[in-house]
Length: 302
Image: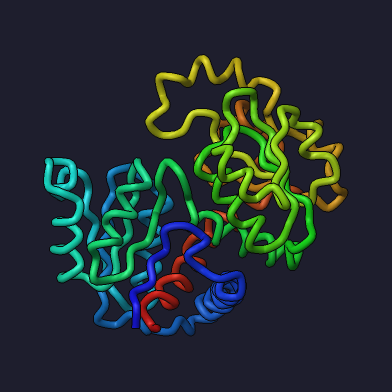
């Protein structure tokens, strides 16, 4: 059977995506009941981090352990990827020693090339272009709190970054309306937007995007690797903070998500982030764990 990788959401079919979310919710329930299955016994996850992360490392390590498996953490100091070894050589070697590989890196072409030469499934833990594992958690969170997102209005406010582009994939796959609000010059990939024009609209006005929205999400204004742009971006994104005033134009049952870490007082107000009637960011963060367990099962139990 052909190896399945998870580099973007579109490596799944819509029915597979929905089934994976259902399984994530089931695994969460089983874990809380002390009944976590152990299908990963004897399996090893290799985790390659060229970009650091708290949530990605802990959720994958804890998830693999809860499923009965083990994981190996590889920082840039621990691998040859950052020392000139060709990506395809690293892929050939690592994939003979572990059962699945998760990579968190910069260029999306790195995970694509690694997957091309890997003998085992490869998971995109984040690239500059996409963050599909986070969208699994976000979709799980919406389903848990509000049910099926099909036909709903979702607003992305902020940078047209990897999170935004994964939301575009999700809109097409789950058939919801996505409105993206970005400052001029910070829009997502125009080819990606054009290919998904049935589901996606890009505007430069946050209020326009949020009007009537059932789900509003954002991210930091300057992502990892963009720290030198932080000061300039604060000015350019000043009108794109998500706060109670902005959400007054959203649906009455709107929920707010943020992939974290958050910069309180910048992309989101502190009081909104802590408002548990609207903000579901802590459930969202926990769901990285359960959604990724469902993903590991899907990729390794085929």
